[in-house]
Image 1: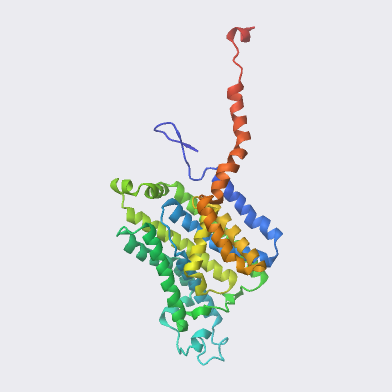
Image 2: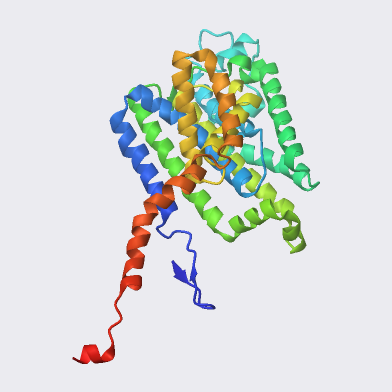
Length: 388
């Protein structure tokens, strides 16, 4: 807490130790200590896969929860980030020695199957890991910038923007599937083995990648928390509630919307890149409309106004999906529909809203009571009594 010199009131420091920061520390302990000690490597790798979706949920908290921009195409950026990382890994696995049985050694196998005789020009830069890492963030952010510039400068928003993002997700899926010789088609980019000679398929590598994934997620949560508590975060909330008033105050509303949309796209792309490393492939099944809607459900179940709620919602929904798919695979789509209806009708603020409404007051009550006791119960001693 900091003191405002103008009015003497306590201000809001972005990094004060409060419920949010304490919750982040608790989440970090869960991810880094509790889960690795309590789960085998197979289940832990599945949790790591779930956490890659949490990057998308974090972006939606800022984009949808704070700024009121509902995007139903976040799978686009998740997939592009994953494909950028997969392209580097595939080129490393397609050395001339490893592909000497092909008609054209030195190119990915799916290109050889589709009778390509040379590596396409846009694949060439992905021989560099540095370029690939930059592209993971830059390419989705650039695409989001182009879409946002075209939409927000024309004041397209609300349901119309959500439908347009869905259309882009469908277009990109069709494009990836149709260009099989360049993208791997419906199968995607598979058989990813090493990262700079390091075998990512071993149990030790999966454990290391899990911790890297968890560390990146915690770092992104802190970054999002800083944005929400800054002046920019307050402007985004004002945009959500009273956009015209913000515009009349002299702010360029479109620029703020473009920024938060690009920021959410970059977060989604980081999750996609980590998904490729954790799972070992990337396919168009993670780019289309259905996965994009599922990602919105992750955020809605956890709470679109809560960063931590979005992470827990992602873990909970994916865990339920895995359990139902293992036992009753035909029931998952019905369960997902029921979950979406429940969020809309019963708890619109998600699990975080239920916690704030019912659990948090009960946890605070004993401490609040103790804090008020001395001031309320302090006896008033008359002066003559003290003198006696």
